[in-house]
Every structure is written in structure tokens, then in C-alpha cells.
Image (cartoon, rainbow, N blue to C red; front, side):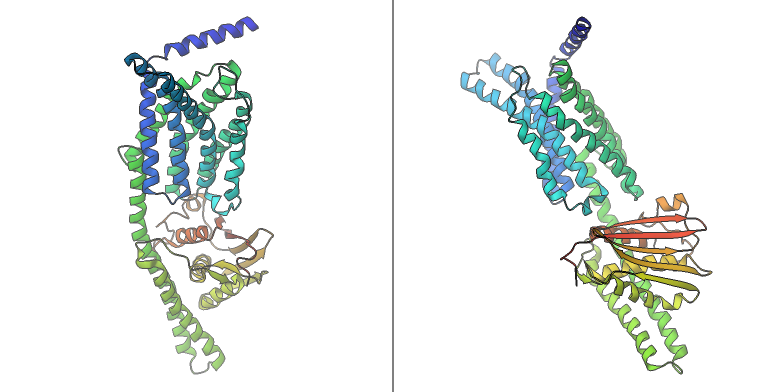
Length: 483
């Protein structure tokens, strides 16, 4: 058994020696230049986004691995051949080579896992991730207390205990984020990100940690050239659809694409809000006109209040859109969801004459949020429910509180949606109401975006002929939103 293991190890060493010529070190030089250039461009162009910062961190830590190889196999031998190598310079380069190597070994799994955490669609509600980054850094820091074997750059036995779960968890988070993404356009981007990152990191898991630990040979990193080549091939392939001339151009094209979409969708958001409120003004205006002779003063005053609230909402939405070349801004204050839902139902009263409304509003506290935007969200969802029941039906509006969440459930007994419609429900400009000229297909996409800005989640469950249920969940942050 021992002899066969030695034979396999010897064969591995021969194969490794076959690729220790200048091709791999030269390739690692290009890796170093490429990764650090990408990392620098990312930091310069979009430093505020946490996902961008962590992507740049992956590029920098991976580039340090290339720098270690360049120092050890190109720069050092070149200086020696030129006769420029001195004892002090040799010592300095030895420190630099070891420092770069450790940054890559310890930094790559950590930055990869942190990226996948902040990249996940639910990361906005993960309040603990603020301190999680420091907790996840502890194993890397503890690794410095272990002495590696004389021939090893790091203490493989201990390092493998935390790097393996880090990388595997990161890969699983990428896959889960792709499967969970509701927007089909963003889902494609997540699929490409997963395809580019997951196989390469899975391969690095073996070449950098598992195989050196098992076989006692730390030269497996040379096979990373093939893994990086695969990643570059994926990026090159995806660039034909999402950009050209590399990853950074692709990212910039994504930003330009979203800017163009923001300009278009922002105007549509405003039109959508105006359409809803003008509809309310028209309905209640007709109601006042037809009932003016016999209406009691109290009911008339309530109807006028609805009209005034609708006109105020139009003003608030115009103010918040900010000229529509910028992102929708939130102006937060304590919002009582129960009262907001009641106002939305009152505003839709003329459309509810054939619908039985069931109210279960079991939370009287307040949420910290933007009242105008949340009013628009709830109105959109309620109007969708009403329009799904042209022959009448039941509408359930439910508000509940748990220790961690506030949940709004809006359920109808309407026509429902099939799986194909459900997959595209949150896509911008997708609509199942093609026959209506004033429908822009933006309602649910806008609602999803606003709820996400409030650190919440929004999901839809629907079945044709049975109805649709929309669940809007907010984090129950005590102290920030109590009124």
C-alpha cells in the first residue's frame, strides 16, 4: 500500500515538473496584471457597493498568488542571472514571496465567502453580516499561530479545516442565490457569475488545500492556470451578450444598461402612480356627482379626503422620483401599516362592490419606512388582486407580527397565474394585462424594488383558477420603527 502511494506521488511529481517551465510563471504574470487591474478599476468606478468591494478583494487576493509565483520563478532567477541579487535583496524578496503567498492562501477563501454572502438576494435582511465579517476573519488570524512544516508555506492541516467549509459554503450560496432570483435578467447574470466562480473555486479548493495536505506536495497550484483559463473563457463568452473586451467593460455596460432602464422605468413608475391616483380621483368624483343630492355630509367629507390624499400622493411620488435619472429615494418615518392598509382599501372602495374583503390586522405598531412608497406598493398589490377577480370573490388582507418579522399577506380568489407567468412576475415591463393601454407592466417590479430597499422580501404564490397570495415581509426592528 505504501509503495503504491509513493509510486502515485512520484508520478504526480513528474507531471508537475513537466509544467514547471516558463509557460505557467509567465501566465501567472498576466494573471497578476489582469486581476489587479480589474480590482483597481472596480474600486475606482463603483466603491460604494459592498459586492463590488468584495469582488475587488477577491481579485487582489488572487493576484497576490500570481505575485508570489512571479517573485519566486521569474523575478528572483532574473536578478540572479544579471548578478544584481544581494543577500539583503534576497531576504527581502523571500519575505515578499511568503507574504504574497499567505495573502492568497488565507484571503481568497475569506473574500470569496464574504462576496457570496453580500451577493445573495436576502443579504439586505441579514443584519448580523456586519459583525459576521470579523468573526469569519478569526480562523485566518489564528492560522498565524501555527507553525507550518519546513517545506510548506502554510500549516495545511489547520488551514484546511476552515478553508474547505468556507469555499463550499460560498459555492452553495452562489447556487442558491441563482435559484432564488426572481428577476429573469438578474438570474442570467447570477448564472454567469456562478459559472465563472464556482468551478474555479472548487478546483482551487483541491489544488491549494486538499491535495497538498493529502500528498505533501505544494506545487498543485500550477494547475490553477487551467482553472483561470476556464474562468476567462466564461467571461469572454458572456461578454458577447453583456459587454466586450473583458470583465470591467461588462460591468460598465451593466451599469449603463441599468441607467437606461432607470430612465425608462422611472418615468413609467411616475406614470403608474399617476394612473392609479387619477383613477381614484375619477371614481370618487363620479361617486360624489351621482350621490351629491342624497349624500350625508360625513360620507361626502370622507370621499373628498380620498381625493385630496390621492392628489397629495401624486405630489409625493413626483418629489421622490427626483427627475427620474436617479434612483428612487426613500424618506423614512414611522408608518403604521394597519392604518396604511385601511387607507388603501378605502381608496379602492368603488372597485370592491363585488368583492368580500376580510381584514385581519393584528399589529398596531409602526414600521420605519417611506409612507408614500409603501402606499404605492400596497395599492399596486391590492389593485392587482381586485383586477384578478372581475366576477367578484374574496380578498384577504392580513397583517401579523412575529419576534423577527412583520408580514403583510394579500390573498385573492382570482384567476391566478401559471408557472411561466409566476417566473416573470417581477421582471420589469412584463405584464399579463396586455389589453390595457394604461398598464406599463412595472407594478410588481417596482414593488419588489421598494420592499428590497426597506430590507424586506416579497414573494408570490399562485395557481390558475385558485388565486394568488402575495407575502411582504419586513424585519421587525424594535426601537427604530415603533410609534
